[in-house]
Every structure is written in C-alpha cells, then in structure tokens.
Image (cartoon, rainbow, N blue to C red; front, side):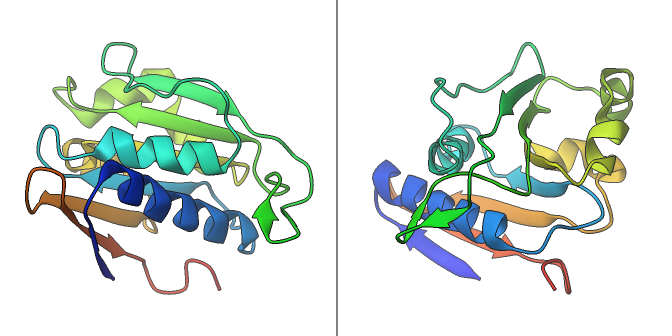
Length: 165
C-alpha cells in the first residue's frame, strides 16, 4: 500500500490510523513488529510519534538513538468506544528501537530483543530496520518512507500475507 502525506500532521494521522487497525486485530503468537526504513530525517520518528499518540502514550516520544530501546506501557481498557481508541486490550507494551548506531544486529541480543519479539503482548517499532534485518521475525510490517518534497512523503506499507488473519 502506498500513501502520500503532505505534512507531519498527515504522517502522524496515517500512523495513528495504522495503530488503531493493529489494536483491533486478532492477537498473534508473537509481537507485532514494524520495520521502518528511510533516509535520515525522512520522518521515521514522526511516524512513531503518531502511532504512539493513538495508543494514548502521554510521554514525549524521541528516538532512542543512544539508549537503543525505549519501552512504553499501554493502557489496557477496552479497545474502541464510540469510534475512538480508548486502550489496547491485547497489547501491554510499545517498544521503540533505533538501530542507527548499531554495527550489527547481534548488539540487540543482550538487550533481550529475541524475548521482546516472542511476546504477543508487544508492539515493536524499529527505526533503521534494514540494519537488523537478519534478526527480524518472519512476519513483520515494513514501512518505507521517502522524501517527495520539503514536507511531503511517500509511505509504502508492506504487510506479510496472513499477518492479521
């Protein structure tokens, strides 16, 4: 699926819409993983900010470039009430990973990435995912963002077959 956004507000809205679809979907056997790719400054963190806001995360979302991983607890109230997102009944944790500084995917292993991938209660968003591709689970959602102009973006979202079935 290819989308075009023309502002950071539109990029965040697209991410929020995706977040709402994810929390409404049937729970999987493993974490729900999003692999974000695109050049520096393209809006990967902006996308994640919109995603997190839709999940009612109140903390300021910044890229965990130096700490590598940040965890955010999710509300566990009913998923949808009167058409708006109220919580994430199936998921307990949003995990934000930034692989920009990594030399190799193996650097994430001592931080517990395999255990994070194994838990069906986690939503994991990975910036610079192409740097850790060998460790990604078999089924993940790829989000590639390209510059079209100063504030416009092309966002390509690729879903693996049967991820939400």
